[in-house]
Image (cartoon, rainbow, N blue to C red; front, side, top):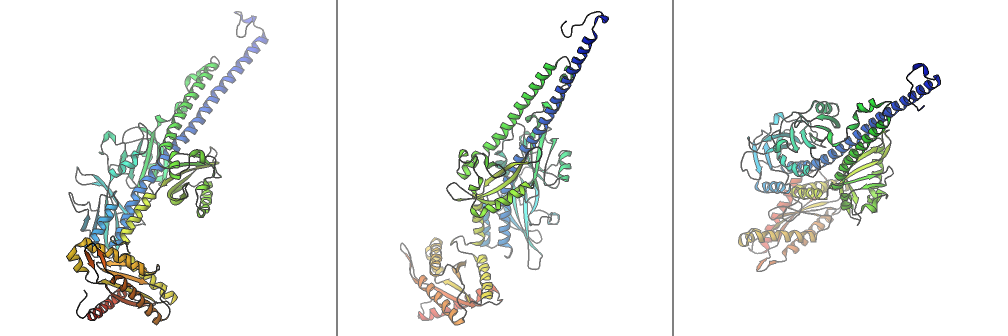
Amino acid sequence: MPFGSFGSVPGARDPSRRSLVLAAAIVTSTVAVLVVALAAVSMWQERLRQRERAAAATQNLARLLEGRVGDVLGRVDMLLRLVVLRVQDQPLPASAELAGELQAMVKAAPVVQRLYLTDAHGQLVGVWPALKGPPPLLPDVDRLDWRRTDGVLQTGPVRHGSEGPWVMVFSMPWHNAVGRLGGMAHVEFAIQQFEPVFKGIDLGRTGAATLRTRDGLALVFRRPWPGGTQAGVGRSEVSAQLRQMVQAAPEQGEYVAVTAVDGIARINAYRLVRGHDLYLLVGLPETDFPKGWNRVDASVLGLALTAIAAAFLTVLTLLQRSRRAIDLAESRCEAIVTSSRDAIIATTPDGRVTSWNPAAEHLFGYLAEEMLGQPLARLFPAERLAEELTLLDRLRQGETIEPFETERLHKDGHRIPVALTLSPVRDGEGRLLGTSRIARDITRQKAIEKEVRDMAFRDPLTRLPNRRLLMERLHHAQQHSRRTGDHAAVVFVDLDHFKDLNDRHGHAVGDRLLTEVAQRLQAVVRESDTVGRLGGDEFVIICEGLGLAEDDAQQAAQAVRDKVQRALGQPFEWGEVRHAHGASVGIRLFCGGHEDLEQLVRDADGDMYEDKARRRGSRCGGGVD
């Protein structure tokens, strides 16, 4: 009789057959239970692995955006520091010359909408560009949060009236010699400046990236804006999960919640923007990641003894769908890596490259086939190899290396300044599988920093050190003289009849004379000497190492005076314009001591006037100005 065919008379069944049927039923039931259990375990493990992938994807996006936002705000911080450095020892309101320098600084930092200064009482004393439209948004000094150790204070988002643009106001104070508040520099940063930063990130159809303040979680910027408007700026409606997370882990973290702004459930990651009181949040909707395995279908459990084959097919179908969804999610992550403007590189624990995106090809000059399987060390300058070993040790200990500035080598050998972030990649048991690196080219940022720094310490016309840098060099020369016993000198140079040239031929010719004078002065002194412009037609030369004996030092300084007067006594000619009036030169020797630096310059200036008088007398009334 076939298995499973039973007679109609109960007593007709053979006990041995009944035992066989019972055994088969037990075996079949056991297999069914095992199938369902294995399916449930498999789907649960897949769920855990995919949740890890989803969290990693959102964290990578958050890390990319946090670095870019930090770069933009870093330029704002740098401008504030340079402005404070330039104005802290100047009287307010700013002079015309100082105002011109501040205007140039703002022009060199296009992310800044407006710069303004307030005095110790919070009164406005200057705005650049010149005030047009609504007045600046002045923060309440008494209510500013002074917890920032680097001195940069944040206010906002705020706006000009009900229709004006939303801005963040960043402020930095300076103090006088007795430690009292001397004034504050403020810059307005339009939140719309974040648009190009956020626009370059692929968030999918319903993903979102948000910038919020640390205190109160007020909305600063979002992509996309709900309804296409900025109506929610400044509001603090967020999920309870986010508030709980930032209290428990204020630096970074991830959570799953329905977004308060648009009601969409997302897997979210947040990071505190380095150096600023702002949170960067990235959320990818749960629908972008597979979720079919997060519950075992009731039909699978109901199959039991009668549908083991159907259970296998159902489980297989679920797993195939899950795999397709995983592949789709991984394809999105791969697309993000491929389209990123930052170099994204994966390596093994011993530093061999396993992934090399197109941005890495563009940044370093090596194609992927040239780098895959090769040691990443070929990108390191010799002096940076120890740095890499230290970073790898920190990664093995579980650290994530936050963005820091370093240098790497291009294929052609030139050095590239980069901002580098490193993260460990681990398996489910915590073992280190490799590292993920994000490198951002900061060449342009460094060039802008140098340009802005030069504006603060260099004369814009001649590119010589200005008064501030000259006084720093003079302080250094005084300290060096005190340590070594060597004499040094301040040489003060004043051009003769410069005003006549300006009045007769215009400022363009005068500027040309000043530029050529700077070149001649640099040509006649040593490389170790400093040539600077005080302003107008006045130049200063700082000469160090003139000798231990005062007589020798005096002769050396006089030799410098003679060379300067010979060089500037040669005619300057531009077409039909000819200028041949030379210069008056004063000298002030010093050796160690604690003399006031400004007094040293004034003494050299006084000696210059004596030289001018001597030269006026020797010319029998010809006169020098």
